[in-house]
Each structure stands twice: as structure tokens, then as C-alpha cells.
Image 1 (cartoon, rainbow, N blue to C red):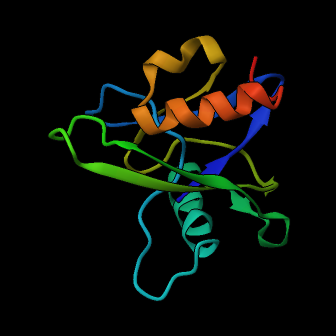
Image 2: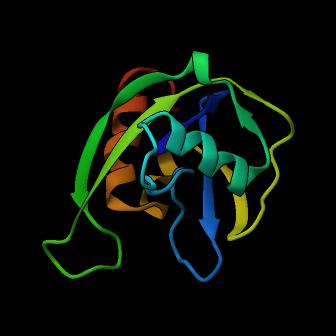
Length: 126
């Protein structure tokens, strides 16, 4: 699950400690969580902000080769847009928070490439 947040033609992205690629904020679902619960929890843990649950809108589901994994290992990412409250700040495993434009697509994971393409086609990513 991932949270997609764009501003001024750029998308919010993060880089975890020890990783070489940027990834859209989010993570894996824990037992008992819904599709929306996962990004709410993950964003609070990673970026210290509260995503507003009633503002969540499904952007889409994307599948691609998993970054840094053997060929054939696929990651499936369900993405939501949503408003948030608070001040964005890296926390826990997140080393860096950045705003990326479409030209930065190569700095992300393969599944993010698909999401960047969708955002760019919609005019949300310059």
C-alpha cells in the first residue's frame, strides 16, 4: 500500500536507511488491516503525520518487478491519495524525504515508474 501526495508538480517520496532507491511512502498490510488502514499506519510511523481517512481515494493498483530482488519477484502496490494533518518529517526507518518530478523517475523502484507515468499523464507530475 502506498500514499500518493503531489504538490506543485512533484510527488512526495522517501528513502529508507540503507536503500539506494526512493519509494513512495507506505508499506505492507498487517493482519486485520484494511487497504486504507495500512497507509494510515505506515505514514504515521514513517512521516509523523496523520492521513485523513475519509479523504482517501484509490489511485490504482500497480504491479512490477521488485527492486533489488531476483527476476520474477513482483511487487503489487495499491495506491491512495489523501489529505493529511501535521508536519512531514522523516521518522524511524526513513532517512530522507524528498519531492520528485517526472525527470526523477529513474531514481525510484520499477513499480514507482508506473505510478510516475500515471501521475504524469494526469498532469499531476511535471
